[in-house]
Image (cartoon, rainbow, N blue to C red; front, side, top):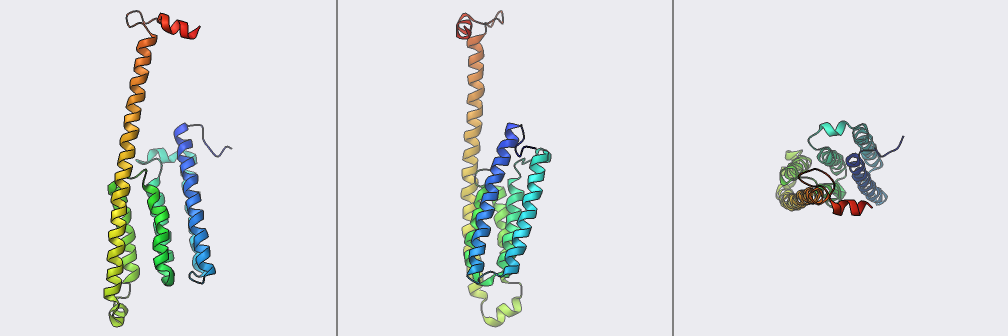
Length: 217
């Protein structure tokens, strides 16, 4: 069985999915580097890798079987980024010494939605990540208050939130420009086909024009 289906749109979606797999491999390679630097524990590395593999198998099955076309977003971009968000939040929660680096690392899957998702969807993903990150930082509020770290953690959360919401706004804007360009191209192709039809066929008789017959000859 071929990995890529016959349908051109499905083939394009699967190719983009393979690109997403490449991004996931890059993220886990960098996590492995953090493991070598004793910033991420072996158990956390293995569990995140297994979770990512399960998500990859799930999304590949949906795309290859054609079930994805029933979704409002057949490319499944948003569910993929949400899955990556959950995996990264797990790693961030269990690797406190590397949190700043992991937030930077999360930008790899987060910005994968630049060319596909709207501002609203990117904002939803950013909100999900910031809410999860806040739960990680302030999970035990009594300890936070006792250590006097509430201001520094709050400042860290605030800066992270501002940065991610700005990226979401920018990414959504770029995605909207891309969609407008694609729509304009589709209209131009349709107009070109109409012009070609007018040139090739006589409007009254429906027969080939002399120019079209000469082109065929």
